[in-house]
Length: 436
Image (cartoon, rainbow, N blue to C red; front, side, top):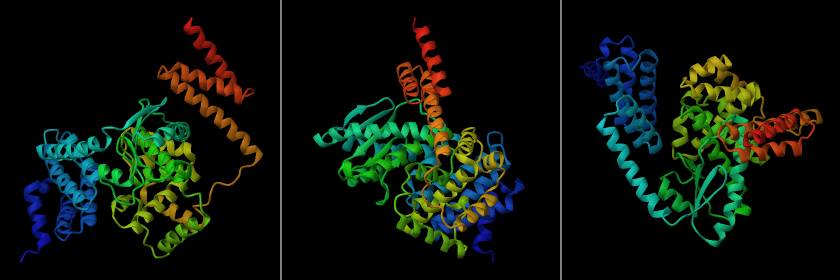
């Protein structure tokens, strides 16, 4: 008698027409395994099988030109979205339905799922945020519950966000043109009510930065780091056009928020977890790490963040922030991460895993950046002047001339003898000439 898996493969060949595809055996196996895992309630395993099947076919075929392949993909994307939903990963389910609509804009089921989720979320947002106050800065729109205390704290929050705008923009060579919305909830309960996130989540970026504020701001260094963390996601989202793998997204956000450079004892514990996993050969390959970020298991979530941070720190240490910025730029051209790694760093995923493991074996991936020498400090000062000039140029490009002038004047004041001060003087003269 035909066993269950063979029956599923046969069924998939009949339904999806895989008999005509060169990849039909492997692909049909992946989908059949995914469906079998779904029936057993093993949703994480199912997700990986469906993703592997989709990736194989999308790499091999031009979906826009082949209707048969497109119909097959629609079916598997529906399975993948369902698996994400069952595994309590609503954001990933939403992204999958959005991808599905790119392939098939008239897919009624995908549209209904997105509209239903959007309606529920919108109602919750309106219920909580309808009476929120709003304040703005040069690059941010801040919404918050209107209390005397929160109104006092709002300027400090906007100041922290503006600092993030400059720092993250300099590091990743990207400054969003539109103002970024940031919503501050007065409690974790209200934050979770609107966002439907796990209890351990300290913030989320979903097109807007959303963060709960449950303690005094002057005691909440962690809160400010969360602002930087979520803003970094916004920058990566914009620069890569939402085409960045989770491990790099989270690794860069951790690198920018510096939350892994605060406590030596915690650093040692993180390192112990990773080195033990390294010895036992149980580290999750970076290519398959995404589901760990969305599980309800805090140990697995922590492992995912540790892996993402150390892999990203390896890339920055080996290729510099400038190199990583080039990788993000390549992803923004809709290049796959596999091809981007190859083109920018001449690495494939397996090679990256190997080099990252060697980096971990050295023993100190969480150690804070050391104090720099006088020579390096001079270089840092030069880089800061250049970063300010870059920011001013960005303002000019977006016709925000007052802000550009302010940054040019800051360069002249703080770095009067630098080449960037001379350039700033030239730009100020040019802007004044245009005004006349």
